[in-house]
Length: 226
Image 1: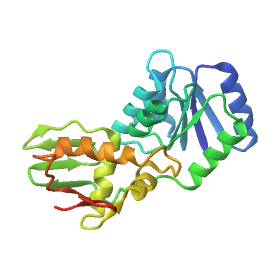
Image 2: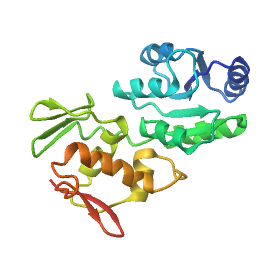
Image 3: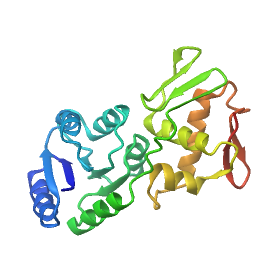
Image 4: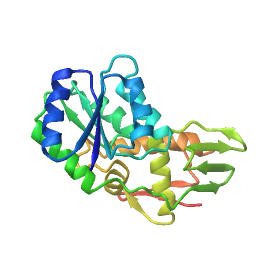
């Protein structure tokens, strides 16, 4: 039976989701505390996580970060009571796969869950590590170093870099990155890809203004060369 973990502190929301998800044939686990989420994920191995941002104790952003830093690729749908783009951007940057803004239709959320389970994000397990220049990346451990010194990358930056490396020598469009890395077709703006690439260059390029590895292809997208 497909297992769904709900991390939400509003009892009415949890009850409504439990009733409807069980009616759809899902097994449901729930916790109202962020710090309890990761132990549940490690113990129960749910197929999908519904994660609220505003939680007592550890918030949803931190929970998402911890899950992804453990190398766990379970799909995450974030719930937010705010409509500001920044919350969506931060959540997706940390590794969430989708988001739903409160108040939401339970039927819509169930449809999103089913869609995400049908089309999970590509696991990219075929690329465990890569070395270019003086940089070494371990994609399984989510660790990066330059000459042995650690480089701090976000989970989303690891996924962008992994996708670019898997397609090294090829032109990768912004839409491809949004679809394959974020896995969400209606992401607010392709400019967000440019912002992520800019930050990634600042971390892995010796001269970000004149990149050697992550090249811009005018009017098309990006190409990784190494």
